[in-house]
Structure formats: structure tokens, C-alpha cells
Image (cartoon, rainbow, N blue to C red; front, side):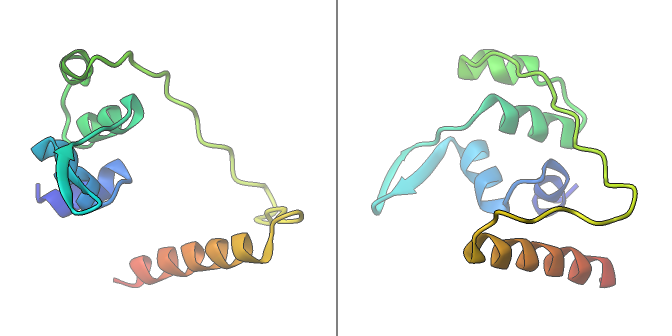
Length: 104
């Protein structure tokens, strides 16, 4: 499996996957040790069919219980009231990205 596909399966960016895999990231132009979360490590392990426990132990992190995604509304309508204009633009961009990915 390619890194791109693994990252997509884990729902993280390829750059985050690379940072975690290499153990380094750049901050303010300087190479520093990468930091991550238990959720990210668990998602990465699940994406490639590995047990996350050894990764979590090595990183000194406790496992996090998986949160079930919210069920889709029966009528297909999502309440976006209360979101700012900026948030609405982000939601629209996200939806457009999903649609574009499905066309490919």
C-alpha cells in the first residue's frame, strides 16, 4: 500500500504520515521531534492492519476509545445554523472535495 493510500485510509494528510513515520517535523524552519496523538497512531495502525498497542507504548500514549461517527440524518439534511461564514466556507470546501474524490 502506498503512503498516500495509507494516509487517506487513516484520514490524515500524507505530510502528517511522513512526520510520524520519520519521527521529525519542521517548526519555524527547524527540524524537531514529531509529536502526535493516540488517535492518530491508532488510525495509522488500523489503516495498515497493525496492532496499535506497541506504537502507543513506544510513544508513551494510552489508547483512546474509538468514537462512533454520528449517524447520517435520515432526511440527508444537516443543521448548519450557528456556524460562521468562515466555517460554512470550510464545510462547502469539504463537501466539494468529497464530490471531486468520488468522480475520480
